[in-house]
Amino acid sequence: MKVHLLHADRDFDLEVPLPMHAAAVRQDLELDTLCAAMADGDDFLMQVAQQLLLSAAGNDVGTVCYRQRVLDDCLDNPEAIRELYADVLETLDTERKSLRFWTFGHSPASLLYRGTKLMEMLLDRLKLLRTFAEHNAQRFESEGFSRFFGMLQQELGDEYLATAESQLETLQFKHGMLIGARLGDGNKGAAYALKETPVGGNWLHRLLPGKHPDEYGFRVDARDQEGHSALSELRDRGTETLANSVAQAGEHVLEFFRQLRTELAFYVGALNLRDTLRECGGDLCRPAPEAPSSGRYAATGLYDPCLTLNTGKAAVANDLQAQDKTLLIVTGANRGGKSTFLRALGTAQLMLQAGLFAPAQTFSSALCPALFTHYKREEDAGMDSGKFDEELARMSAIADSLVPDSLLLLNESFAATNEKEGSEIAAQVCDALLQKRIRVVFVTHLYSFAHAMHARELPQVLFLRAERQDDGGRSFRILPAAPLKTSFGRDIYERVFTKPRGEVDITSRIA
Image 1 (spheres, rainbow, N blue to C red):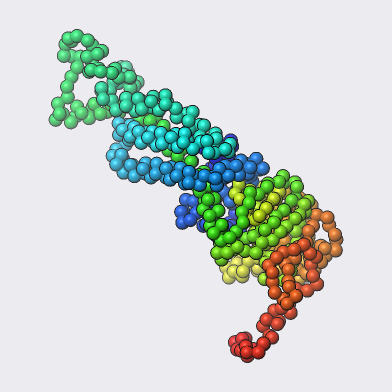
Image 2 (tube, helix red, strand yellow):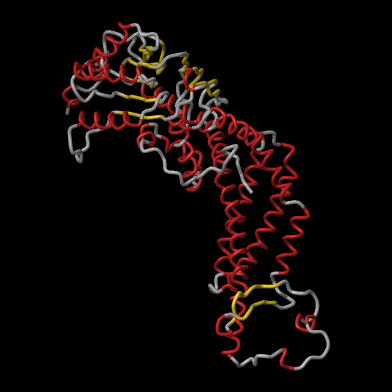
């Protein structure tokens, strides 16, 4: 049995290693905040959310749309999904607790007993699962859930369940155990095999009807430890293959429940995130994935969900329209919302590619095979080299992993050196990325770089700017606009050195 709620053609593997750049993306986009909202205090939900978001960049349009349709079913039937997830958790918890009572030996006979008890419990849980499918299948329309519920009803039919119950009843050996063997070298027993036990009466009498001499049978005295040990050894030899088969069957069913837990966890996390963002007043939409070659960004009301979750209220939203644009350069005054906009765009991209909703009224973007971030880092006393060398080393590592149509988010990159040198390096890096068809969103204060790029009037470059109001206030809106000739250092001067009446003396401020 296969789950296939995250991929149409395979189960999701939670143990697949994440991309080497996943840790930087997680840090720079503050994804732990988003994943914590999905987890709602559950460590396993947190693990699944992180794994699926950080590995999302490789998904294609088909996978994204497949998950979106499954998610639509979950959003329409949240109580049923939470009930199903709770049933799966109860199954796995019951198995875990039962091991304490079933683990009393490692002999084939002990393993067979334990495996039989496990299968009896799992068979009851499979019946509940089929009943759930029968009661809820009509409410779900996605390909994923239609296939899943259909599989349960087909593979767990009445005939199958009756046969399974009968076989488990047989494994209790209420009528005794019949083991066949042949004589091997030195007249020792060989090729021990469990035989089907005749039903009703003593098996020896059924094989040998009538009266027979005593040599055809024997009785072991209750105090004969050696005799009982010999019989146990014969029983173990005869049941070893069966014990392994029953154990494998139980593990197969358990793995199905574990896989179902993993894949449902993603959608339960989505329900948790939806509820939390709605409480904060954030809009959500079903995003539209585009082919990687389209170079498209389109959004209305795009906001940073992590900022919204941290503040408890909807963050300032922005609109964006960019078709066939490979490089977006974002400039403007400090504390104007540029980094927040960059984080919102990167998070929305990952949410789209994971098959989630997007934090916007509408959102559409070209899919990318990989997403990278290159943010400025605070000074680290443990660095082996200077801050600028560290920036270049990280950029070099990213360049080694880039493939066409990858998305690279740059935030104040190359600002650890002087303006002239930083601008020159930024221009050369961006030119190389454009030639290799890498999509880039670059938040920068490098004046020379931004103006030089604008002067070239490249058709694949879009310029955005953080809005600054006439009084110096920030609206935190990012609008299409050319870079200005000032970085508004006057704002800082006036905030620090201008003393309105009633404020403390400047010397006390500096102190």
